[in-house]
Length: 229
Image 1 (cartoon, rainbow, N blue to C red):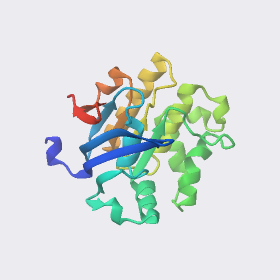
Image 2 (image 1 turned 30 degrees about the horizontal axis):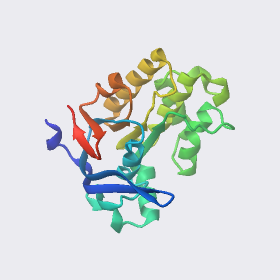
Image 3 (image 1 turned 135 degrees about the vertical axis):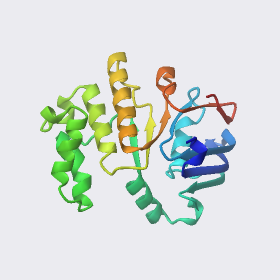
Image 4 (image 1 turned 60 degrees about the vertical axis):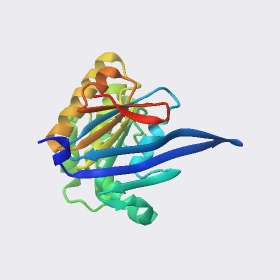
Protein backbone atom coordinates (compact mmCIF):
# COMPACT_ATOMS: atom_id res chain seq x y z
CA UNK A 1 0.00 0.00 0.00
CA UNK A 2 1.42 3.39 -0.98
CA UNK A 3 1.08 6.46 1.21
CA UNK A 4 -1.52 7.85 -1.20
CA UNK A 5 -3.76 4.83 -0.51
CA UNK A 6 -3.92 5.66 3.20
CA UNK A 7 -6.19 8.06 5.04
CA UNK A 8 -5.17 11.71 4.74
CA UNK A 9 -5.06 13.17 8.25
CA UNK A 10 -3.87 16.71 7.55
CA UNK A 11 -3.74 18.67 4.31
CA UNK A 12 -2.64 22.21 3.57
CA UNK A 13 -3.64 24.29 0.58
CA UNK A 14 -1.37 27.16 -0.49
CA UNK A 15 -0.41 28.19 3.04
CA UNK A 16 1.85 31.19 3.47
CA UNK A 17 3.25 32.83 6.58
CA UNK A 18 4.55 36.34 7.12
CA UNK A 19 5.85 37.65 10.42
CA UNK A 20 6.51 41.19 11.62
CA UNK A 21 9.83 42.35 13.05
CA UNK A 22 9.03 45.81 14.38
CA UNK A 23 7.71 47.59 11.25
CA UNK A 24 9.19 45.13 8.77
CA UNK A 25 7.12 42.29 7.31
CA UNK A 26 9.17 39.15 6.70
CA UNK A 27 8.01 36.30 4.47
CA UNK A 28 8.82 32.86 5.87
CA UNK A 29 7.23 30.68 3.20
CA UNK A 30 4.62 30.85 0.46
CA UNK A 31 2.00 28.58 -1.15
CA UNK A 32 2.96 25.35 0.60
CA UNK A 33 0.88 22.26 -0.15
CA UNK A 34 1.49 19.37 2.18
CA UNK A 35 -0.25 16.18 3.29
CA UNK A 36 0.14 13.83 6.25
CA UNK A 37 -1.18 10.28 5.92
CA UNK A 38 -2.00 7.55 8.39
CA UNK A 39 1.25 5.85 9.47
CA UNK A 40 3.38 8.47 7.71
CA UNK A 41 6.89 9.45 8.83
CA UNK A 42 8.01 12.86 7.60
CA UNK A 43 11.05 15.04 8.21
CA UNK A 44 11.32 18.77 7.58
CA UNK A 45 14.83 20.16 7.27
CA UNK A 46 15.99 23.69 6.60
CA UNK A 47 18.34 26.41 7.76
CA UNK A 48 17.79 28.30 11.02
CA UNK A 49 15.11 30.94 10.54
CA UNK A 50 13.56 29.24 7.52
CA UNK A 51 10.29 28.76 9.41
CA UNK A 52 10.36 25.01 10.20
CA UNK A 53 8.94 25.32 13.71
CA UNK A 54 6.34 27.84 12.53
CA UNK A 55 5.27 25.43 9.78
CA UNK A 56 4.97 22.64 12.37
CA UNK A 57 2.75 24.86 14.53
CA UNK A 58 0.55 25.76 11.57
CA UNK A 59 -0.03 22.20 10.35
CA UNK A 60 -0.86 21.12 13.91
CA UNK A 61 -3.34 23.97 14.36
CA UNK A 62 -1.40 25.90 17.01
CA UNK A 63 -0.78 28.90 14.74
CA UNK A 64 -2.77 30.26 11.82
CA UNK A 65 -1.25 30.86 8.37
CA UNK A 66 -1.22 34.35 6.90
CA UNK A 67 -2.91 32.92 3.80
CA UNK A 68 -4.18 29.51 2.74
CA UNK A 69 -6.08 26.73 4.47
CA UNK A 70 -5.30 23.81 6.78
CA UNK A 71 -7.61 20.79 6.84
CA UNK A 72 -7.53 18.42 9.82
CA UNK A 73 -9.48 15.19 9.25
CA UNK A 74 -11.07 16.89 6.26
CA UNK A 75 -12.32 19.95 8.13
CA UNK A 76 -10.97 23.43 7.45
CA UNK A 77 -9.67 24.62 10.81
CA UNK A 78 -10.66 28.19 10.00
CA UNK A 79 -14.24 27.04 10.59
CA UNK A 80 -13.45 25.43 13.97
CA UNK A 81 -13.60 27.47 17.17
CA UNK A 82 -10.55 27.45 19.44
CA UNK A 83 -12.16 25.28 22.12
CA UNK A 84 -12.98 22.49 19.63
CA UNK A 85 -9.58 22.82 17.96
CA UNK A 86 -7.88 22.50 21.35
CA UNK A 87 -9.90 19.34 22.03
CA UNK A 88 -8.79 17.86 18.69
CA UNK A 89 -5.14 18.58 19.47
CA UNK A 90 -5.41 17.11 22.96
CA UNK A 91 -7.19 13.97 21.74
CA UNK A 92 -5.35 13.18 18.50
CA UNK A 93 -1.97 14.97 18.59
CA UNK A 94 1.11 14.83 20.78
CA UNK A 95 4.23 16.98 20.82
CA UNK A 96 7.88 16.28 21.63
CA UNK A 97 10.40 19.10 22.08
CA UNK A 98 14.14 19.21 22.60
CA UNK A 99 13.64 20.87 26.01
CA UNK A 100 11.51 17.96 27.35
CA UNK A 101 8.97 20.26 29.15
CA UNK A 102 8.42 17.86 32.03
CA UNK A 103 6.73 19.11 35.20
CA UNK A 104 9.63 19.45 37.69
CA UNK A 105 7.50 19.01 40.83
CA UNK A 106 6.10 15.65 39.65
CA UNK A 107 8.02 12.39 39.54
CA UNK A 108 8.28 10.27 36.41
CA UNK A 109 5.09 8.25 36.77
CA UNK A 110 3.11 11.33 37.87
CA UNK A 111 4.27 13.20 34.76
CA UNK A 112 2.62 10.41 32.77
CA UNK A 113 -0.58 9.74 34.66
CA UNK A 114 -1.73 13.25 35.59
CA UNK A 115 -3.16 13.93 32.09
CA UNK A 116 -4.98 10.58 32.21
CA UNK A 117 -6.31 11.36 35.69
CA UNK A 118 -7.60 14.78 34.57
CA UNK A 119 -9.40 13.12 31.64
CA UNK A 120 -10.96 10.47 33.92
CA UNK A 121 -9.16 7.56 32.24
CA UNK A 122 -9.56 4.26 34.07
CA UNK A 123 -6.47 2.43 35.38
CA UNK A 124 -4.37 5.53 34.78
CA UNK A 125 -1.55 4.41 37.10
CA UNK A 126 -1.35 1.00 35.43
CA UNK A 127 -1.21 2.59 31.99
CA UNK A 128 1.48 5.02 33.10
CA UNK A 129 3.65 2.27 34.54
CA UNK A 130 3.29 0.22 31.35
CA UNK A 131 4.48 3.24 29.38
CA UNK A 132 7.50 3.57 31.68
CA UNK A 133 8.31 -0.09 31.05
CA UNK A 134 8.13 0.46 27.29
CA UNK A 135 10.79 3.18 27.44
CA UNK A 136 12.96 1.33 29.98
CA UNK A 137 12.29 3.62 32.94
CA UNK A 138 10.21 1.44 35.28
CA UNK A 139 13.08 1.54 37.81
CA UNK A 140 12.97 5.36 37.78
CA UNK A 141 9.23 5.74 38.35
CA UNK A 142 9.60 7.83 41.53
CA UNK A 143 12.53 9.95 40.38
CA UNK A 144 11.99 13.62 39.58
CA UNK A 145 13.07 15.12 36.23
CA UNK A 146 16.15 16.76 37.78
CA UNK A 147 17.26 13.31 38.96
CA UNK A 148 17.14 11.91 35.41
CA UNK A 149 19.75 12.24 32.69
CA UNK A 150 18.95 14.12 29.48
CA UNK A 151 18.38 10.85 27.64
CA UNK A 152 16.09 9.58 30.40
CA UNK A 153 14.11 12.81 30.39
CA UNK A 154 13.57 12.55 26.65
CA UNK A 155 12.50 8.90 26.98
CA UNK A 156 9.99 10.04 29.58
CA UNK A 157 8.83 12.77 27.21
CA UNK A 158 8.33 10.16 24.47
CA UNK A 159 6.36 7.92 26.84
CA UNK A 160 4.16 10.89 27.74
CA UNK A 161 3.53 11.64 24.07
CA UNK A 162 1.99 8.19 23.55
CA UNK A 163 -0.29 8.28 26.60
CA UNK A 164 -3.28 9.54 24.64
CA UNK A 165 -2.60 7.09 21.76
CA UNK A 166 -2.29 9.97 19.27
CA UNK A 167 -2.82 9.79 15.54
CA UNK A 168 0.14 12.12 14.94
CA UNK A 169 3.25 13.10 16.89
CA UNK A 170 4.89 16.42 16.06
CA UNK A 171 8.53 16.46 17.14
CA UNK A 172 10.64 19.63 17.09
CA UNK A 173 14.37 18.79 17.23
CA UNK A 174 13.73 15.83 19.58
CA UNK A 175 17.44 14.92 19.78
CA UNK A 176 18.79 18.48 19.72
CA UNK A 177 20.00 18.46 23.34
CA UNK A 178 21.41 14.93 23.36
CA UNK A 179 24.80 13.41 22.63
CA UNK A 180 25.27 11.02 19.72
CA UNK A 181 24.65 7.79 21.68
CA UNK A 182 21.51 9.10 23.37
CA UNK A 183 20.31 10.56 20.07
CA UNK A 184 20.58 7.15 18.41
CA UNK A 185 18.76 5.44 21.29
CA UNK A 186 15.97 8.03 21.36
CA UNK A 187 15.57 7.88 17.58
CA UNK A 188 15.25 4.10 17.58
CA UNK A 189 12.75 4.21 20.46
CA UNK A 190 10.61 6.88 18.81
CA UNK A 191 10.38 5.12 15.45
CA UNK A 192 9.75 1.72 17.07
CA UNK A 193 6.87 3.09 19.13
CA UNK A 194 5.36 4.89 16.13
CA UNK A 195 5.42 1.62 14.21
CA UNK A 196 3.92 -0.29 17.13
CA UNK A 197 1.02 2.14 17.51
CA UNK A 198 0.72 3.08 13.81
CA UNK A 199 1.28 6.70 14.79
CA UNK A 200 2.22 9.23 12.13
CA UNK A 201 5.35 11.25 12.85
CA UNK A 202 6.39 14.70 11.66
CA UNK A 203 9.91 15.74 12.69
CA UNK A 204 11.65 19.09 12.38
CA UNK A 205 15.37 18.40 12.52
CA UNK A 206 18.86 19.43 11.48
CA UNK A 207 20.01 15.82 11.90
CA UNK A 208 20.34 14.21 8.46
CA UNK A 209 20.73 10.72 9.95
CA UNK A 210 17.41 11.18 11.75
CA UNK A 211 15.78 12.64 8.65
CA UNK A 212 16.96 9.71 6.51
CA UNK A 213 14.83 7.30 8.56
CA UNK A 214 11.61 8.99 7.45
CA UNK A 215 9.56 7.74 4.51
CA UNK A 216 9.32 11.26 3.11
CA UNK A 217 11.91 13.99 3.56
CA UNK A 218 11.24 17.67 2.88
CA UNK A 219 13.49 20.70 2.69
CA UNK A 220 12.13 24.15 3.56
CA UNK A 221 14.21 26.45 1.39
CA UNK A 222 13.73 29.70 -0.52
CA UNK A 223 10.20 30.15 0.84
CA UNK A 224 8.93 26.78 -0.33
CA UNK A 225 8.80 23.15 0.78
CA UNK A 226 10.56 20.71 -1.53
CA UNK A 227 10.23 16.92 -1.43
CA UNK A 228 13.71 15.39 -1.30
CA UNK A 229 12.87 11.67 -1.01
